[in-house]
Amino acid sequence: MMKLSSRSAPRPEVLAAGAAGVTVVLWASAFVSIRSAGAAYSPGALALGRLLAGALTLGVLCLLRREGPPPRAAWRGILISGLLWFGFYMVALNWGEQQVDAGTAALVVNIGPILIALLGARLLGDSMPPRLLAGMAVSFAGAVTVGLSMSGEGGSSVLGVVLCLLAAVAYAGGVVAQKPALGAASPLQVTTYGCLVGAVACLPFAGQLVGEAADAPLSATLNMVYLGVFPTALAFTTWAYALARTTASRMGATTYAVPALVVLMSWLALGEVPGALTLVGGVLCLAGVAVSRSRSRAAARVAAPPATPPVGREETAREPR
Image: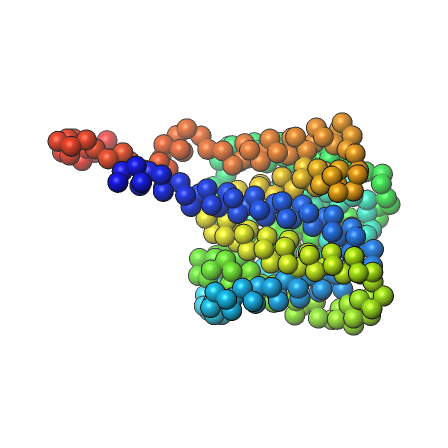
């Protein structure tokens, strides 16, 4: 009985880590698909098509699981995260990446996890342990390295930098707003209705979507649908599941694994061989995530379940320490 208890104790944490891993892999794959779909679809149309595909997928999941609307207490966070993260962020990022080179976009957007940590500490009372700060510093250095190694692949503009900066701010604000909503509603409810809010906010681009879909190649449309089903419906749900079980700051730091995975996926899928500087930056990103998600020995002892006292020494076990 004691062994079963000790084995099941870390299960929620392991599941949350696995969910976070699914999220970062799918979000990394989104960059490859965006590059394909973005050649045929404008930023707003691509965001709307992606959100509609995601909302349809999530709606089916809600019906299958018989999940109703979220309670009133969750709606404030859902509305804010839906407008900022699902809506504004996707349009701004799509638009910004058309204005600046990939390196500049990576540099600017990757301030998002830092903003999440600052907002989480200020608004949610998240702790800022030294390991988290050190890991984020290492990962950000890796993101800067990746960004610098990729710079020069395209043009840059002030508008593009501003759009990427606004996308990072919207991303951070959406994550921090979503965290309290997860205390009142399930991850699937929060993700589904956040996606619906974002889709409604992007409806002004419906005309562009219809017109561009008629002329777009099938591969671009399939990539848009993929973005909706996997990096949106599935990845945002696994993100919400993990976020409900940890702090916003720690989850934000986890996303620093995305640049390293993007480099690997671009190498495998697009044949873009990374340079030495890019590989170093990717390794730093992953190392920083490992540090930020690790626990000190003291924290691990606090989190560990207390050992069952041996038979005949109950009174000793009850003495305060």
